[in-house]
Every structure is written in structure tokens, then in C-alpha cells.
Image (tube, rainbow, N blue to C red):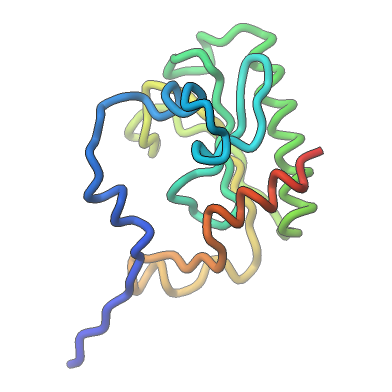
Length: 160
């Protein structure tokens, strides 16, 4: 039996990188460089950024600036802005990528799949009929045809 390998080199900086323990959703807006932070849009109460380790190209996360692990702690203006930004995200993704569908949702708590369970964020994942293939099952890897930097430029250009 021959051994086959699947490579996902874009994950190595995350795997080998120092884990600061700092909340990524609090830290990135303070960087001062939206392109380096992959922040596509800033609102008054919330912002939109690309997921650095996406399920598909264009995978966005919408996060409030307020550090809280649940939507119950958000005021109405922040909740409204989260939903308005999700609508704008869908529109930008339709222009930039023409997906066939979307997954939109919150993962609240570690057991629900939240990688950062102490800072709530809304995932907006564009989907295509062919994006669920054998690679995640057989190779435990996803195949993404576009670099994160290219996704950033495409979505900034498509933002309405």
C-alpha cells in the first residue's frame, strides 16, 4: 500500500505560531491595518473579516467589537448591525463569487464548534454544489482555489 500525502501549507503558521491567548476578535480591529487583519468592512458596533482558515473561499465572520460569548449580552443596535452586515456580506459574496448557496450561523460554545467561544461571531460561508467532495472525508483536507489575500481584494471590491 503506498502512502499518499495531502499538503495544506497555509495552516503551518497557525500550527507553529505562538498562541498569545489574546482574543483574535478583539485584537484584529486594533491592528490599524485592515488588509493585514483581513477586515473587509467596519461598522459602528461590528465588523466583517475573512476567516484565516476558511471552510470555503470567501468565508466571512461578522463580530461585534464587544467581547462577549453570547448574543444575549448584545444590545439591539449591535444585533441589528450584525444582521445588516450579514445581508451586505451575502450581497458582496454573490458579486465576488456567485455561490449557489450559503451557510449562515453562530457556533455558541465549544461543544457547538466555536473555536473562540468567548467572543461571539456570525459565520457566512458561501457554498457551491461541488465544494463538498471526497477530500475532507478521505484526506482530512479542504481544497481552496484562491489565496486569502485574493479573497480579501475580491470582497473589498464587491462590498456594497
